[in-house]
Image (cartoon, rainbow, N blue to C red):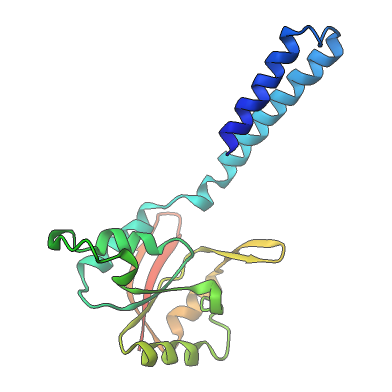
Length: 193
């Protein structure tokens, strides 16, 4: 849709210039200012948000590791949109089963649905244990440094160092995977005991 809007906008400007409607320099300067302002704000927005909407090597590495070390259908509590990594790397391509869909490989639960990333919740242990019993399989939770929240004015939630330490010290979680960058950013996978 946005490319059609841009094409329509440019066609309209071209028509205004061809019909000599914009003879005054003030109109032309305003139009040039509007175009340059739009371009600068668009590219600035993309530059500053690319870290939030793109995958990192450590995130993809975790999905690859998990896919190589499990054959069961498990419950994966993950960030909004990250379930597609597990679908891609864990899909049995060699079987040639066209009826198998990616969402049937594991049972995916978005953490924001039940606030499952919030370790300080008193009933978080009970929610995860209930999920484990209902599905009759292992539950793996994949907390991320930043996760999609979409709660009021907040778009993203962030795990602090204290939250990460609370995950590590939780009596009902066992750390099974960790990838850490040189700057200290970490992605860990926890298995619900």
